[in-house]
Length: 120
Image 1 (cartoon, rainbow, N blue to C red):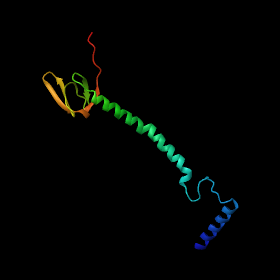
Image 2 (cartoon, helix red, strand yellow):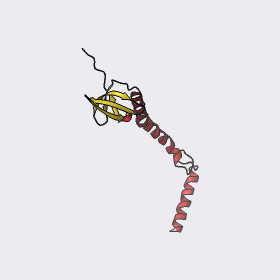
Image 3 (cartoon, one colour):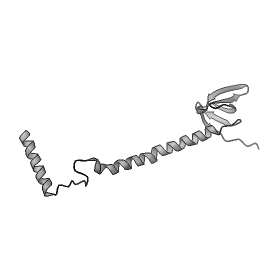
Image 4 (cartoon, one colour):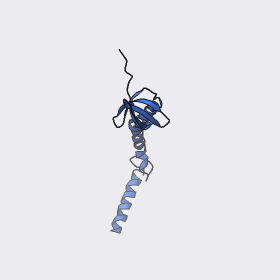
């Protein structure tokens, strides 16, 4: 078996000598990453623009929405509770969900701010 491997290595070396020894991929001999490097870079660029960047944009919009909360805003929590903001602190929001019924939530529990209703 060993003798067979040595013969194969000699045949391979002879073939490489006839073709000039340059690999077909155009990269450095013995380094398979050289040909794949542009593909890896393109993959990460696509992942960035399709997944990471939109997520960062949504997170920035959410932070802006939470920081712009004010008394009187109608909101919906992540649990589906609708209410009106009656109190604010740095990390808490107090909602009035019914007459004489208030609930306290962390700011992160606010899913969306509903548009103000216009009185006609």
